[in-house]
Length: 293
Image (cartoon, rainbow, N blue to C red; front, top):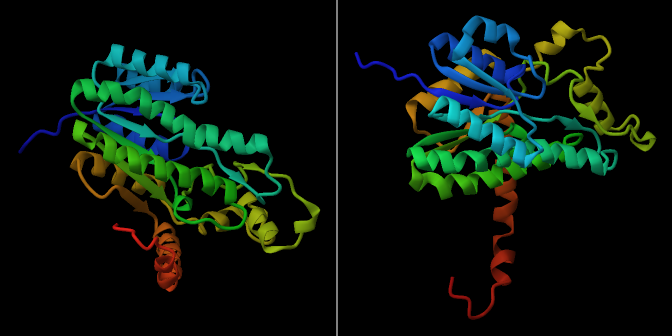
């Protein structure tokens, strides 16, 4: 039987949620993990258990120079890093009107610019070593938008667009890219742990107000145990599928995880395609007479 070669993963936002499940499975499997967090000592228990198998550092995703320094240090100390898992994310919910310019800046700074800062820091190293894999955590919300999630979805749509283009640009360097689109995950990222915009009185009692309250976990008559059952995604099962995709080394650009993600993305794409087909004649009528496309 052919031996499975151990890999070195670099994981951003490595405290809590999906990242914790991925990291624990990797360490248990004997892989090496370089993990970054916002606060020093956040992984002390895992460090005590796994020692040098776990490399850790703080990293400010919003600071491009800090990202470059940490990534360069990781490669200098570890030699080879096979996989970048861009996991760090920022949840932001509420009406588009109620979300401030500063909050909008913050959600893009983490979800889009932080992911791009890290990917850009990795690409020269991946090219030099002749291989690499980028696993970019996006969201089912990167394929549709709905009330109370407008600005969060906007940041994830931008992630999808940027990394779809990057995947094509870096493929010739033997750098593979996977965009992961999870649905709801049973982690502390839900149930009021995100950031929320201002509650504008005019929206009180409307559908967007009800959705926002649900995201906060404010559902009268529903306790936490019942709320958890309304979330589809098992973080351990999702982590296993991500690891298996990396081990396989190939697959579709996008990886949808969770039945809720599949159903919502399918419905959104079908609706958009139907609307597009209905406008085909209109689109063609606006072509220039000498267009030769």
